[in-house]
Image (tube, rainbow, N blue to C red):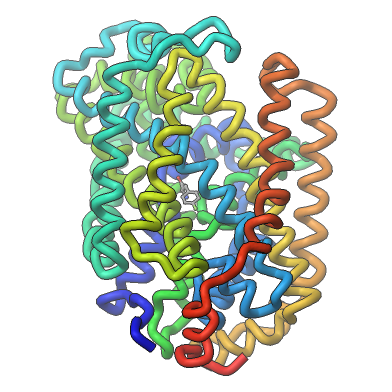
Length: 502
Ligand code: PFF
């Protein structure tokens, strides 16, 4: 064996990296508005249900597969069962789709970090964001030209990501010491500041007051599952690849609990930071929180929150802090996705890190340019919607079927239990075989019915068809990739390095 598999350089590196990946833009802007739009405090019931029935079992499964079969997803699944390699590529494909637009949202955050120094968004923050900043066109059919400031930040972002990935798993372990902790520190400062503001309670009331009627609405449950998948970085190459860099005797199950609870806790904290501040803004303006929180979504971070910042004493400081938060949140989520894909390419074809990185980053960068145009926001919205509603959940389901019915969940459970202090019970087998897949099928079908009935956000059919085509192309492309030959070195390496016999 001429080459050893890379490993994490210190004990906590893995769990820091997983938390760094999980805690991202999904926690700071997505979670708060999803909660608010889906029944407020009552959303925690579907959210916890989704965490317990899909989040935790699937995280356990992904860590187990990566660690037992020692590879990024395609190779790990391929080693478990020859024909299962495709499931690994499916997750890699979904990750590839996400890196193309996540890098652009990161570029917006970098631009806004710069604008925060002068509070350049002015008083009409919505029109600043949509027209001055994005130069938004009239529809997805009009792309217009590349937006230069966004392009510049996009290039800087990619260079940073490539530099980090090129430093290898050891380098990642160092970078996450900062990127996983700094956002939490910033969030605590923002939450404390927010809670001491006049009107904060009204904001929290909007965020947390339960609307139990919402529990009867399937959409609320769909939103909870979507949020758990996206936020825990499930269904993509990330967690499997990260687990494959663990040493042979690593703890698995307690890392699952630490990472999933940290992610949920940090999302919860972000809600406090955002809604207390939005509550303050409502009080200052003499209006309701519902009125100012309005559309939410990307808007919450890029135009609602800046408005609130404008009103704060020390606005510039808090503006800088908030956009620094978004940038640091985005960086380690983005490089986790890129690493999952790069690791897969390296494993499959026994490629050098630099070559694999070029094979992933160059096309990823070029495709992402679509979102840097004037029509980019529409495409970002469409692709984000489809990859989240269908891509990730479908990969989660495929993993349950393959592990539950072909590889055998008991194999993964026994592997995890042999290493971990917290033992996983037989419930795991039941979840992976029956409960999780049944729930995911239900969620997928419900989303399908909703989206076929009402075109998403009223976009033209041809534009939505691009989203549907992406959803269909992912499994097809994965199947084709799984048929390509694996390098001999990769095949041989497993028999020498495997940590616990299959
Ligand atoms: N979990 C990240 C977030 O909440 O923003 C996004 C993400 C990162 C999704 C990595 C998927 C992934 F593999």
